Image (cartoon, rainbow, N blue to C red; front, side, top):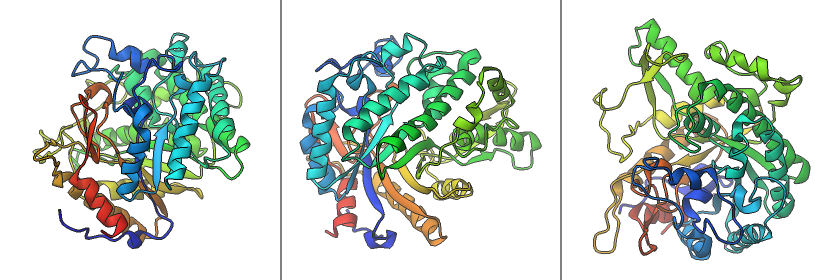
Length: 451
């Protein structure tokens, strides 16, 4: 493995280096110590929901192995660890009775991370809604704003004295649209009539969660994260393709950040959002806004769209990399573009406000193989070199970037894809739970530790 062509010092002394994870994808122990079922536990039991037919009952067994997994994170040179709290591990019914064993687990995890010199960055919601709340309508039910605020208060009261970095939601456009509109993710609903309610309730919860954290944790650094992709028209000369790209950009990139910034929903491009006015209560539009300290960008690939009459309301469809004859080297079929991350950083930097940007997730899945006890994933290392070069260029342009979090520490349960796609810096044999630090992880150690 070649030495880094970048240097840690290039990014500044306060730049945060971390890995990002999610509870459901790594913890396992889904029926242990009082944890209640989540929508993903239910979803994985549905025939055909998970491409490989697998579940996350064991996942990476992080619940039991977190001390050694945190040690691997530190050995690669990372000084921060982003993880999520499983709502149903804290409140098995979503509200009401607190599961003390769940609080005790996260207390141990946080303490161990701090002991090992890794700053905890806590994501409050990473898609695993308690099934008990989904049975009451989930994100379709306006009461979820109150339920979420109650859950957030329980967590931050327990850990706010030692955790200062809080991220409210992970990719709200993903769990709303994929979960309630197209049914690809939990809870697997396809309900266009309800999607505006789902979007509005998630946007309200995003702001309300931020207010709860700030009110209860002195000195808290409060953020939230968005999936985002630069969007281009397939035919730049086509007005219909250009308009399709504007609508897709509004859906993929603007849907949740603009309400948080006090700009309202992008109704000019997405006219179906005007129906939110019928369900909104007095004061809702004002309560959508919250002054986040951090905005997390989670970017994986660019999007190219064309006009399509087959997709109502959006009138746009994505044009695959294969159809565009773009080389695709990732296992997920995603395009790796040398300027894509920089373009989305520039786009989000145009928004007003005194918040900082940071890369909350960056990674890709490749066809990793173990050979002679090693995983030589040169493509993943090259991917991160390319991304970090774009981060450095953004900094050179004067853009304030707080940090870079790799997705992800461990090969995990990749939602509806099962265990097949591997994103980790650490290879996990999910049969034996054996770990191998990949060559990409060793590259990060060279970058961050100077080895």
